Length: 351
View (cartoon, rainbow, N blue to C red):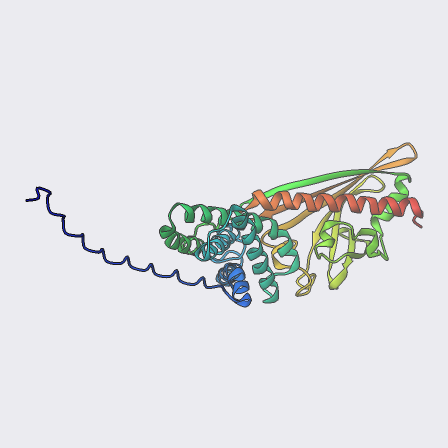
């Protein structure tokens, strides 16, 4: 009788492993949809900016005036935030995108305001550096928020868009503090004070090429055509004519022939025709004014040192930006106009 143990029964055959499900096919956007997905965030940001601009279309001094700092600073910030929020909903982006794509949105927005005739070229070119910087900052901040917590990005971007409107509704940012500044420049002219003085009083047939290198003319301010002086009971009166029908008077009751003259500006209701200048930069307006201009002539041997001093006012809630910009533009103009008088006095003695 065998003592070997019986063989164990065979193990049951294991069931076959389930076949793994095939990965879903990668859906590729058509070229047209890919382009649309690329530009949709930019268009969305620009659209929000246009809607905010329409909201802030009030007259100076009103709760929703265009020149309130809550609009000028916070609206481009919101444009940048919306641009990046929409882009991050499609796919993650880098910090370069977060900054530079909002700049495109801001640029498209300001172009839209020009096409809608809400803004003129002068205002757009003066505001664009600030708008671009704030738009880029808004994009970077929104990008960081999306990285930290995508869920919180939706209420946050809504808050960024609503913030300027809410602040304006509560009267925040209505202040327009006045800031008085001046610029002073000098040039040496190889002509006598008498010759320079005559050109200061009477400058006729001014050609654009003589002055158009000044930046204020490059960005759209019409160039001067003539400035002719006559005497009146009130003193000296200088009739100034510029392009696009602009005309005004410079009045002086404080002058010494061949020594100095101090001009003050007199604008009539029809001095600046509609459309000739942007309302926001109109001289004598709510936000900017030229108070007076003084020319001083100092003999230097057979030459003359001509000095110009221009006093001006800016009145905005963002004078920290507007005042340096005005200082640069007026200082640049002062240098160009001094060179104009130098060229004329040295080229042909006045009769």
